[in-house]
Image (cartoon, rainbow, N blue to C red):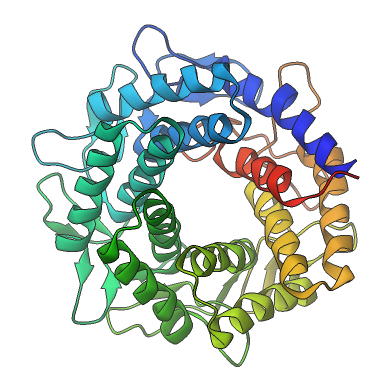
Length: 389
């Protein structure tokens, strides 16, 4: 029942919304859908968003073999390699205009990681060798320009010519972070998929090292939370807990372990301990997941991607532990999401978030940070993980 419902939701609600945004004139997908569902056809298009569109339609085609998703993946691929990829200085731009001209030409390792993730997935779906070539090019850039061997950390922000900049794009809460968990998490996700695509020994080595970095530097073995922002020496900058990133990390780290065939007891314990910790700390009475906590203040906004990642994370925790508690959490999260996060307006998709008072946040429902990636991935993961019931 759950599997069928989620599958139907992907096919009839999520992907049709994004497919309608295909820009046949300038390439890629329109950059903004306002809260009132009006489409801005001249909005800028994000480099991260372009990669996420490519990943979503590639994965949807690989798993379902529906030709309409393949057509969208081809369309997304062309825009990414023709316009978002910088053929002069290499790497992916942060932001381009609706015609594909660079608007913010910064190179961020977070953006590059999504390029590797998307291109690797497109290769898995199509066996397009050019896509794999670009994925490896970006991987090499990330390792040569974007990795600091001295402190075993991925760097963050660069200008177009790959000179390092302060990390303004991915810092929040009043700090500028030299190292972020968010970037490391998405490098991990990208390298897992690149390794699945290539079985390459260097990718395996780097991915294995990254799992170790999570265990040694990012994961707090006492509190079971992940730290979020760090200085150059891996000192944490804020007492911040990002509940959504933690539960997302739980299953993405486990995905890396499975790809690597790495059954290290410490790492498996980390994966399940994170899930138990977030279940205890952040599940609310209505079944949803809170956003984050800074010091004593808990942000009770229910954000779309947090609910989507939590469902996969707790489903993965159930598979690891066989603890029925996680299944109950999964079912309640989906009920909450269906009834509150899913936009039931004709032509709607998912709201960005729901405020603590239960009202949808009046924020764009399609923009450089909001694409089909999180919620289509939740659907695809559940379609593959859940048995027919």
